[in-house]
Length: 59
Image (tube, one colour):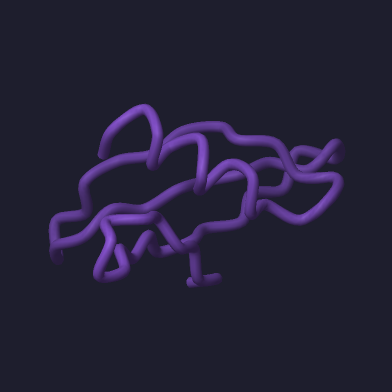
């Protein structure tokens, strides 16, 4: 994932969530993890459209 795609993915996070980390999943694809102020984590799948833009989907 490029720096541009990472910025696109971060900008799609809901208000109150902040980017924590991302990784390449064993099953394939990229996962993005965000954290809320209370420490709970939310996982997202990262997809790429035809123009190579990043789109996140709650996992």
